[in-house]
Amino acid sequence: MLLVMPASCSLATCWCGTSGGRITWRQVSYLTWGVLQERVMTRSYGATATWAGERFTDSQFLVLMNRVLAFVVAGLYCLFFKQPRHGAPMYQYSFASLSNVLSSWCQYEALKFVSFPTQVLAKASKVIPVMLMGKLVSRRSYEHWEYLTAGLISVGVSMFLLSSGPEPRSSQATTLSGVILLGGYIAFDSFTSNWQDALFAYKMSSVQMMLGVNFFSCLFTVGSLLEQGALLEGTRFMGRHSEFAAHALLLSVCSACGQLFIFYTIGQFGAAVFTIIMTLRQALAILLSCLLYGHTITVVGGLGVAVVFAALLLRVYARGRLKQRGKKAVPIESPVQV
Image (cartoon, rainbow, N blue to C red; front, top):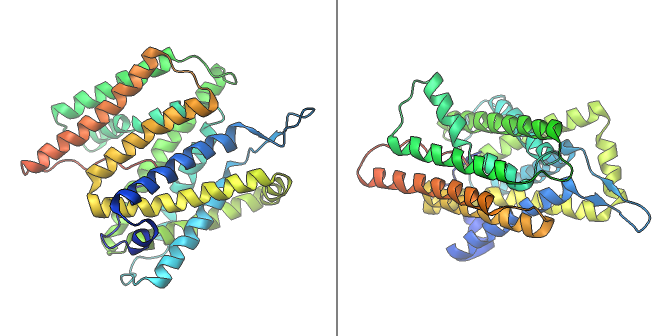
């Protein structure tokens, strides 16, 4: 989900000091978010010498916690800092909110079936289905370098997937489930970004968008959890495992702060710099996940990862050259949603 913050992002400014410090804190927020996401969804809580512990399985509960905190942060910002006059119909936020909830749910659920490095690479290769959809639906034409980088991304992802050994918990069926969930994440996240782009025609601020979308997200997730009777069970799990409660709270804090840092980075440095930072963060997240959770990547798989991120950086460079020549470049793909 791509939200653009005006240059005067005073909240992020007073949190983080210098520009370099703000970028560093943003990276720390998202790297922590990635590590905790994998910890919560793939590891047990309460394990002892005689008991294997239990895993948290309800992704909707995590989505609710993330959205509640994001709603509170956005609400406080709008309360203390002047915002443009709001003119968008409230129901318009519900469409982006529903797709946002579904994309987040797919993202968490996918970690039950595929490794975190695989999930990150799938997100990074989102440009390929976006280009295919543009070609088929909108009859859009692309530059030669766009086809080249898309091809490099597909080659890099293929190298990684074909060379990496299966996860201990994976099988052909579970891997297929993970692929379907990742496909759902990409589809829902793409819809969220496009719908938000249309809503910005009402001249709202990014924090107003954040407030409206998260308001409906809270309603949707609470309603779904109550209907399934899962809200109480999630709360009980938090009561049984204080470590999980701390992880879930920190996960939500990192998610909310990460959104604010996105706004500031794009507003101050532009979308191209933001995409470079996001690309480097994804590469660091894969490395950190392998170090902490023991994912094995072969030499060929590591080369595939390098090809993917080199292609993403090449896309940013090519767009920058087009901008310098005064040509209209296609928009930069939306970043990974938190």
